[in-house]
Length: 299
Image (tube, rainbow, N blue to C red; front, side, top):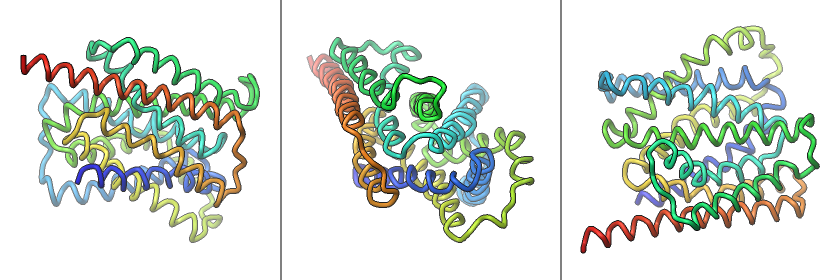
């Protein structure tokens, strides 16, 4: 059942890159992040009051919750929406597909998890593939395209950290409790940044398609997809959850070609294949490590 849920979550996430690319063309990233986070926060606050009644976070975990709030909106969502306006949906999906690589690196740094040799090789291969995509149009750090790709690294790094830091809290308090609170906290943190641009924005330029896009980003992604992500994290290992991001580049690229007419270059295909090989090595390494640990327990 959890794998079916993660497949559905992946479909929503894949569409997010397309919808965000379209909407951010007419709504600046600061205003869009503010509106998206407010829609999600209000919806989640209502559901939280009805379902959870009260906050159950212990004193020792409160700082961790604040960090999750910082990671999920001011860093992840804001960086993503700036980046998607500068680069392509396919690039965004590919970078998020490398989540297992970032999860492994962050787990090693923060949780002192030892990585097998071919996991380390996988990380190197993964970043070679990412580098090919980042500099698909040449090594030019002043270009918007390169800047967008580099901002995607910030977004994915924060998403990986959100995954690593959030899983213990999900196991302790439940997926809805943590995903809701992190979004509400993140929206509150972003409010001082986004409220003035949002007030000054000319809303007469927004059409029905923009409203649907905002609802998709605010409810479909920020509420449903985020909850499903943490729901799965509470039932299976983080690396098994992250592996579903493999499908995102494929689905998003197909949608980008059909809907946006995006042209796919050979360098993107090459970089994507190399990056995903690295991700598979990392994922396989973690699975082997878990298997070995179980064998040792049996013995």
